[in-house]
Image 1 (tube, rainbow, N blue to C red):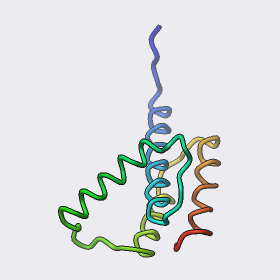
Image 2 (image 1 turned 180 degrees about the horizontal axis):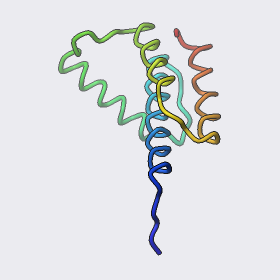
Image 3 (image 1 turned 60 degrees about the vertical axis):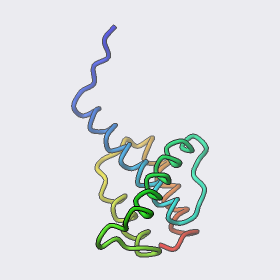
Image 4 (image 1 turned 90 degrees about the horizontal axis):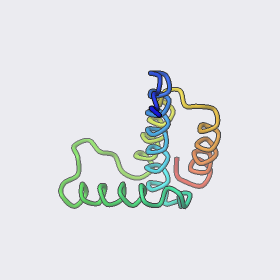
Length: 102
């Protein structure tokens, strides 16, 4: 049996993935834990970020609360995400806002 996705479904999956990555980046920047099911992806992002920092800081990169604000803006600019995914993501973003330094 073939599994075919419509363009709209592919776009929704892409936007959900982008929102998940943005959430993880904000949780890392805020020093907050991520849900256990995202531990592997969080570790990949942290290792990648560490390699970037150790190698060279990208020009114009902002640190601290400024970085967190940039990530929050990126999250809000992600495209449409299915309602069932958006609800869980929004709870995590709210936690970053209230417990982080956004």
